[in-house]
Length: 265
Image (cartoon, rainbow, N blue to C red; front, side):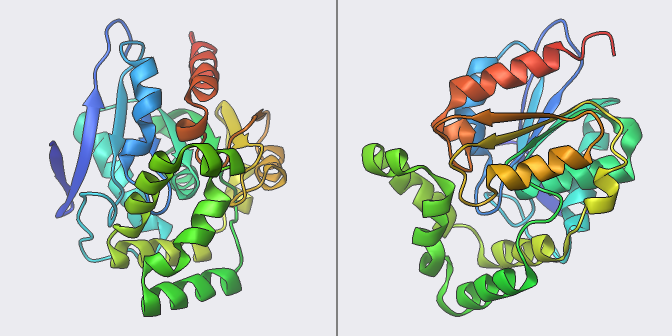
């Protein structure tokens, strides 16, 4: 289990090497998950491109450190992680809150970012009222209290009906996250607004969303794509908030095609 200390925070990560290419893609996971959500995609892309996955601060096996107060804390970790590996240019795939982290890194250190894949995310997610309600409930009753509602928005009805074991595993992943990391990241998303910086993104960008995403619906993700000059917008059918779990083949094809389009840039 590889760990690296970033500013005194131990981040759990996995680096997958590849031959004949130097452009790494970094996957940034969503709220209440760890990097295992990318397993099916990584298996399909193995050997084609270098890949780095990691558990955000306060998620999975990573430390919480001094806590999470804003998206900047996650951006700090990602920025230092890139420096640790000595990457010059990267492709960032940020899912949900991970997409906000990717936008934050691009705004802060645009010279590092060759391209963005922004999945099931937006420039602004939710309202202060909705996040404060979630934070209060979780703080009082734990993540278990909101698990059913979260999973309903996260996965399609078909997934709920036909993949009971996978759903149970995803529920375990959610409810076993460290409470301070979960609550802190909820606060970070609540306070984040990348509306203005999205208009200044100047790298190739692909925005992806599941057609049945109940957390960041297609129209919200489309509004992000509309802000970013020249951004592509793609919808994955029969997928919810985490297409890499429900439709890994379709998602892998989009990633592969987008990365191939960057050749020579």
